[in-house]
Amino acid sequence: MPDIAVLDPYQELGLKEAFAYCRDLVEDPDFPTVRRWREAGGKVVGHFQVYFPEEIVHAAGALPFKVRGAPVEARQGESHFGSGLCSILKTSLELILSDRVQLDMFVSHPICDSARNLAAVWGRNADYPCEILYLPQNANSAHAAGYLRGEYARLAREVAAVAGHPVTEDDLRGSLGVFNENRRLLRELYEIKRSTPWLVAVDEAYVLVALGGMIPRDEHNELLSWFLPRIRAREASPQDRMRLVFEGGFCEQPPLDLLNTIAKFSYVVDDDLLIGLRWLTSDVPVGEDPLADLAVAYLEQSSYSPVQHDLRKPKEAMLIERIRNAGAGAAIVTAAKMCEPGLDEVVAYVKALDEEGIPYFVSEFEERMTNFDNMQIQLETFIENLLFA
Image (tube, rainbow, N blue to C red; front, top):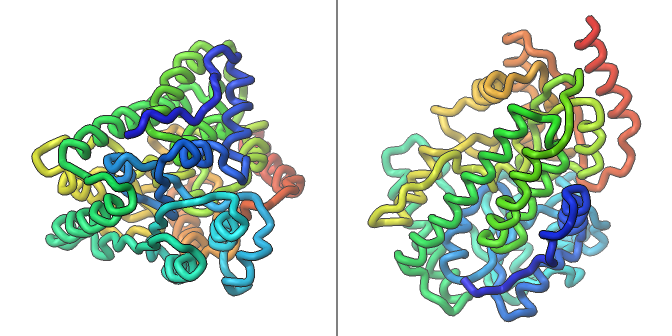
């Protein structure tokens, strides 16, 4: 991995100022950290939601960049997609058409009917390789791990050609070590959210996770290692607030101001925001065949989302488990507008929550929302009814 630092010095900042710096980076639609990497001579591989084996790109010495849309007006992107499709497709393409972000390769996944055409549309408007990574449709097949290992090997060859650096097994083992450390640090962040949620708000935790998709993971590990002890040492006292789980942020992301609005009067103790960056729930064993280890981990050591179909992980049951493990008293069940997988799951989630007697609040969002007054009033009323019933 090239020794390229993309963050400004933050170590002398106070915690509040450091969070503000991170938030500015996450909300900047020009993605300055990606630009710095590329201007320093590094290669960038963009990948669309939800999960992507970033270790392969890291092992090739390139920067894996999570393409997650942006709060921009998709003036050019709109012309390439139908009006009834989700916003993230259009704003993601807009980043390229408007030259806000420059890539050396793009990888997409057929996670839904809309996204299945993204790589083809992207490829007609870019002069670099645009690939599709086919994750197993049947995660329960005995052949799924072997098939996925082959897909990862194909991806490694394509990435190596772009990066100009072979993806060796030793490089992959080194990358697995870096990412295992990252997973440990993210688990620690979420443990703080669950056990002492008054120390870190949902929007603050979000920016720390999101930065991982736009800076070198080694640098992200350093950032998290700096933040976590300072968050634990924060002077804050618990308040009488409802503990909530936020469900519905697996692909298109809600605006940070929406998360900040929720944090003003509740504790979000767990969520599926940017779940692709936290998809593997435990360390990946580093063995003789790191690609096989990574493939098995995708199937056996992973979270859940509406775009993976695994009979061993019924999503309704997994949501109930998430709520109970976090000690939450209610759930915010939401979906991005025009998101077919997300909206379909809302129906199933609501049915399961009704059966378990768990209160819930249902809503929709769009990444370019700017007004949250109505949602704030409705959510405050929902929480007050629970607290004072």
